[in-house]
Image 1 (cartoon, rainbow, N blue to C red):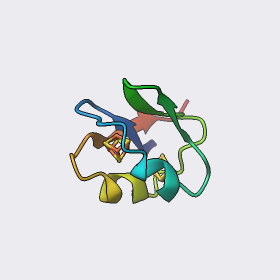
Image 2: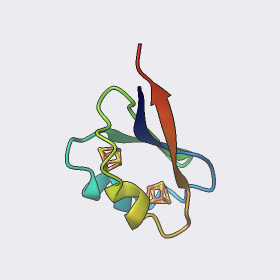
Image 3: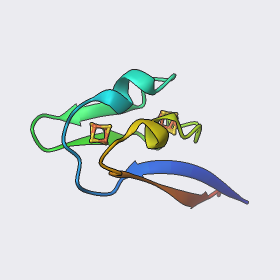
Amino acid sequence: MAKRKYRVAGGCQCCMTCRYECPVGAISLIEDVSAQIDPEKCLGCGSCFDACQPGAIEPYEEEEA
Ligand code: SF4
Ligand code: SF4
């Protein structure tokens, strides 16, 4: 069964808004490059997606083993 997750696709402006919104601390920052989401921690809540003004975050379906 597929599980919805979120990832940083591109166009990240390193504003860190998403980081403050994430309830589980799954988002870290590669300084001056991009935010990144740990797929192991991501719950798929979509809060970061809703918060990202530039639209740099996208959903995807992760297949469960
Ligand atoms: S909210 Fe969007 S632009 Fe800002 S750090 Fe997160 S992914 Fe990057
Ligand atoms: S979808 Fe939710 S849990 Fe996953 S990185 Fe975004 S805010 Fe965090």
